[in-house]
Image (cartoon, rainbow, N blue to C red):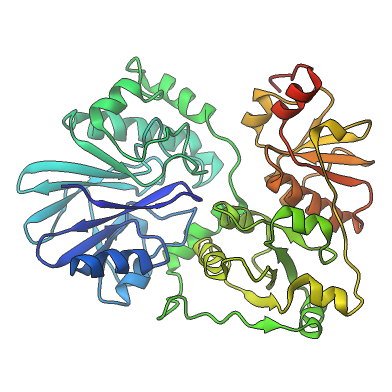
Length: 456
């Protein structure tokens, strides 16, 4: 029996809808937007009866309460200490789904109270929903409950995998929540599902049957930085996110005239410009943060905005506002004040100032400083010999900018570097001297015939 995978490619996560065979369904690790589950359920004539959690999530707002508002029962580990109505379960408990059974496997590691769910038909195992305890080619990180607990939880993860999960049959399907593209995951492969046997043979954390110390060293070596909002979402998910109602999301996003935007800015609002970077480059509101609407929009939005301040959005009419709002709400950015009616042209028509951030090709990099804002692992894999480096996420949380003069900011394609340049321009109070490279380090090497440097 294969569950229906609902994949959020931007977050790198999968949730699962399980047809229980009696007109009901269960959803495991639902994201906040209930509409995909509702669509799948309607097509199959199902009602969602259960919303099941493997752990308290850091990278997205749980959707269990949205499903509960339509009648689903929330089922989660008692140790997660959720502060809203749910059925709390413990290791070895079985949840009877009306023929099918979900058995609780305590698998601490990614979080202290993490559980996996073994799906059974009677006594026959059908598959295991592993959450972050075991993924395709990796598992989820163990430092999100506090860096002081990283090693303790990594050792717990070793025991969870070796003593519990790897004792299951080799042919048993593995259905993880975190996968490729997730900042929660380490070294995840491109596939979204696997088997116990395949992970024994191919998961870099497990090959060679490592002892506990070796496993911990391999696991923690794969940790990079993670979005700032990961530090606050577990608390919000424990407390219970607010239900946004029907039709989802029951959250107005008004059009704002120029006067309203100016008033909001005077009271501390921040501007997020979701237009493609070439449009942002040609003109944007002073102090605006560039975050192009794409699959990773929500991740970077949650990383770079101040969650205590309202967000004014700048978009073009041809952009998908529903998708923008969905991604914002998924990462817990709810104080969306509205969008600038008429966009940048309305601002320009009022004679108000705009800033520019020129896009340049890699062959235009000359004598200016180069600032590479990619993740550490990307930087180490190859960078310009004379470039300075700081991660975009660090810039967003107050790191010093290691350059001060004329600067070309670069990443792999341009979106992240435009975000970085917009943050620097905001903090400097000027866009002068900043340019954004529309290309990668590898593009530069191919154009110039020069070698990249590798390592730190």
